Image (cartoon, rainbow, N blue to C red; front, side, top):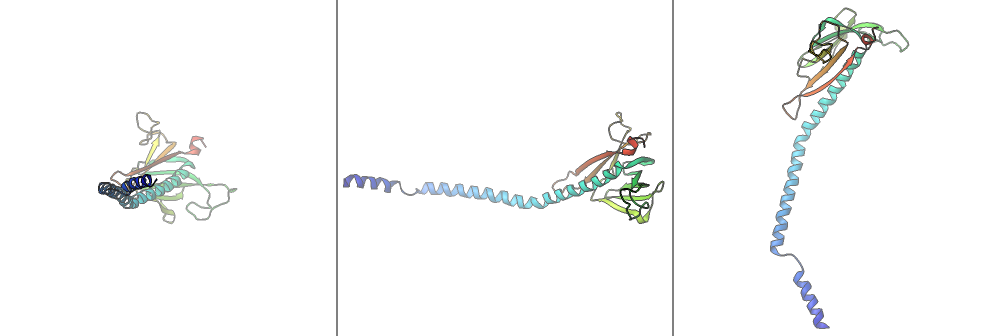
Length: 208
């Protein structure tokens, strides 16, 4: 009985603990795993500002684009002399007492026709609201889009493309659709970010 107990204890004592080789292997694997984890963490910390900047640029451009297309939908007709890639002017109905004024009217009141003109450069787009047929109004000139890096913002349908239904330079006929593309800097790379949308002139499409 005692001999059997001693044999069992000797077997347990022989298997207890780790050998030096096992400890070295485990330590080496731990160093590799910890190093990989630290490398991933450092990379994530370094790229976080770029990702945040990119998300902010996209969100801002999306808001600016929605504002412009919402107003285009209320358009009646586009000025034939101002329908380029960097400028567009159209007559739209607005709910204000005067064109360019700050006093809104109630939803039950009749809307008035005003001339809305967007002019874009390589840095921003401005908006002018004036009386129908006018294009300047210092009291109602505002910057509606900023942070862009390309003045080619607008395209039209019908266009001068072989397929006139593809948005492009405006043709001789009056466009009923305006496409808007904002190019904003990409903090995480050389390629710019492109946010595109467009809208049909609702009143023009319905021949009001």
